[in-house]
Amino acid sequence: MARFVCSMNVSLDGYVDHDRMVPDADVFRHWIDAVRRTPNSLYGRKTYELMRYWEPDQPDWDEAEREFAECWRAQRKWVVSETLTEVGPNATLVSSDIESTVRDLKQRLPGQVDVSGTILAQSLADWGLIDEYQLVLHPVALGSGKPFFAGPRPPMHLEASDRIGPKAIRLVYTVAP
Image 1 (tube, rainbow, N blue to C red):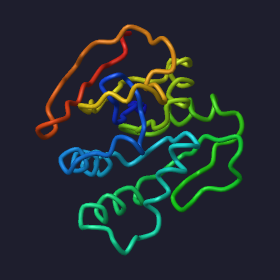
Image 2 (cartoon, rainbow, N blue to C red):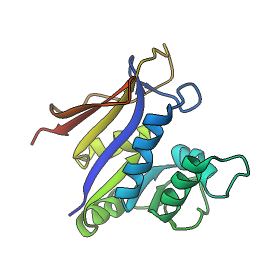
Image 3 (cartoon, rainbow, N blue to C red):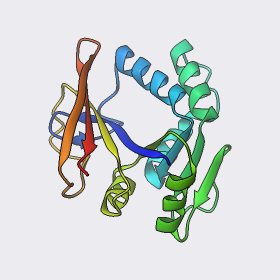
Image 4 (cartoon, rainbow, N blue to C red):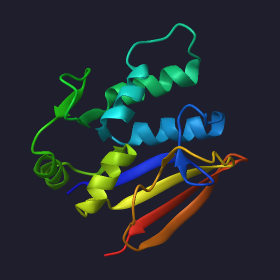
């Protein structure tokens, strides 16, 4: 059975914004390693569309960006969307019967599945499918944007915390049984 883990960069005041909060080299290295370790991802539409940036090589990428793109492309992806009609390479569109399809993935996939997208994470949490949250906390207050938690969550237990470079902290919470 898969373990569904929602991991994202988060501001100190709890917002997710990939345009206003760019990871430094240490945090980017953390994400390269995390994506390399995780063979499967489940995306919401908006986050998947943002991440498609990594599909074609860009001429101005440095070595770390090329490494991330290679790891990301290797992941199997499921994209939850009722509006998309197609997805890119190594991705499967989930556009109907979403809850039962996601429950089936949880039952049959081994290991960890990364869950990306706040709206998708909210739905999965409502269905009792999220096992763990990993917040990479950045030292910035955005004041507005998309909240990491879009609604109330069940009780959680702090399982781990560690620094990522001199600025960021990773917090790992498991959902209480």
